[in-house]
View (cartoon, rainbow, N blue to C red):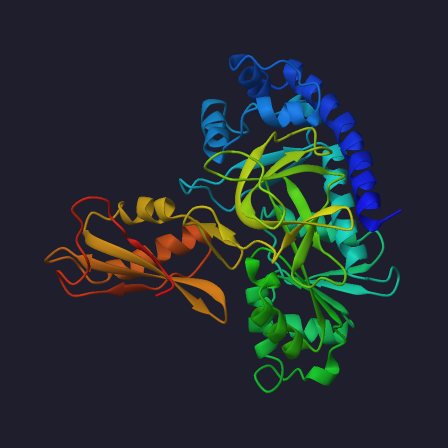
Length: 424
C-alpha cells in the first residue's frame, strides 16, 4: 500500500468519525440552541446528510453575528445548547471588530474537550509526564488559553502559575522550582529571554528550560522569531494556536517546524477562498473555517476565523504550512491581543479634540507593534494624548504610544480614509 493510498484511507475514516459527531450536534442545535436553531430554520436548511452537504448548505458564521446575538440576548447570547444552570466555566475574548469582548460559557463536558486538545499539544511537544515542570507566564484574566493549558497540564505535569510576578520574579521562580517548559506568547518569550543575565541576576545556567511552547501570535511559526527564542533560552520552540471562541485548534507537527496540524478529531476544518467560499486546493492559501465537534455546549458551525493559512495534507492530516500567515482583514495581533482598526477608531472618536489620526503597525523583532499619531484641534490640551493612551491600554491591555503631530501634517482623505498603515 502506498503512502498516498494510506493517507486517503486515513482521511476517509477520519471523515466518517467527524460526521458522527457533527450529525449529533446538528440535531441538538436544531431543537435546543436559540442561535443556530433559528438561523438554520431561517435559511431553510434541514439536517444535512453528509459533511459535503453540510459545507455546501450551512451558511458561514460571522463574529459580528455572534456579537449581535449577545446584544439581543444579554449577557451570554442564545448560542447555548443546554440549560444555563449546566454551565460552570466563563471566559472572554480579548475584543472584536467593535472593541467589545464576548463572553463564552462551557459545561464541564465541553471544558474537558478543550483540555483533551491541550494534552495533544503537550504530547506533540514531547513533554514527559512526571518529569516536566510547566511555567505559565500569563496573568490571571478571563483568557481561555491560560486556564485550559494550565488545567490540562496539571493532569500529568507539575504546573507553576506565573501571574502577578515581574519578569525578574518569573525568571527567579523558574530557576528556583526547576521549570523545564515555558508557556507564553512569542513576544514575551523574547522579552523575558533578553532579561536573562545581568538585567535580572538570573543566569542561563540557573535555568532548566528545555522547551518553549508559544501561542497567541503568529510569531511562533516565523523562522526568525523561533530562532531568536531558541537562542535566548537554549530550548526547542513549539507553536500552537487556538481561539476563545473554539478552543485549542492546532499543534506543531513533529519534524515540520512552523507547520501546524489541525486537531481534526475535535474540529471539522475548511480552508476556503473568502471571495467564493469554495475550498482551496492543497498548496493554496485561504481562510480557515472551523466547526467544533466536541465543544458542543456552545458550538460554532462553519465559523470564519479570519486566519489566512496555507493548506497542506501531511501524513493524512490537515496542516497549516507556515502556521497562521496573516489575517484576512487588517486586524493586527499585538502580544496576543486582537486589535482591529474599527475598534481603535471607536476609542479615538470618543475624544472630540482629536482632529485627525493615523495608526501605524510596524515590526519589532518580527512581531507587530502599534503606535498612534494624532493631531489636536487648536487650543486643545496636549495632556489629552496621555488620556487617550490610558484609554487604549484599558481597552486592549496594551501600551500603544500616542504621538502628537503638528497641525495639518497627517494625510487628509476625500473618499475612503486609510488611517491604518501596515509595515511603516
